[in-house]
View (cartoon, rainbow, N blue to C red):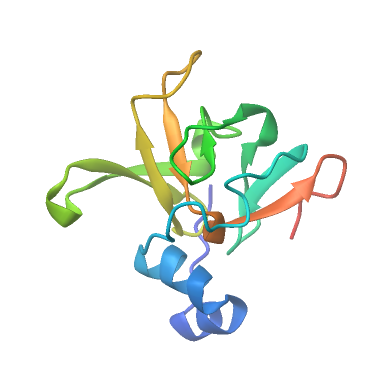
Length: 136
C-alpha cells in the first residue's frame, strides 16, 4: 500500500481533538466511552484519517475491555504492527498501513480462529454500513 501522510495542519483541520490525539499522538480513549465499543451494526470499520477499510463487523466481538475488539483485520496488508515499549510494557501497536494512524494494540488473548484481539480506539474508526460505498 502507498503511504499517504498529510502534514500536521491538515490532520488538525480534518479530525476532532480526540481523533487527532488518538491517531496522530498515540493516545488512548477511556474504556466504555467510544462510539463503537458497544456497536453492533453490520458493515465495515474504516480508518477515520484516510478511509481505508480496516475491520469487518463479522470479526467484531465483545472482549469486555471497553474498546471495539476484532479477531482479524479485513486483510493483513491494511494494518502495520509495531513493537511498543511505552508505559513500561511490551505491546504490539496497530497502525493503519496506509496513513500511519495509531489505531490501538493487538494481544494474543482473542477468540478462535486467530486467537488475536485487535483492541482498537473508537476515535480511530469511522463506520460504513454494509452495502455503502467504502470510500470516505
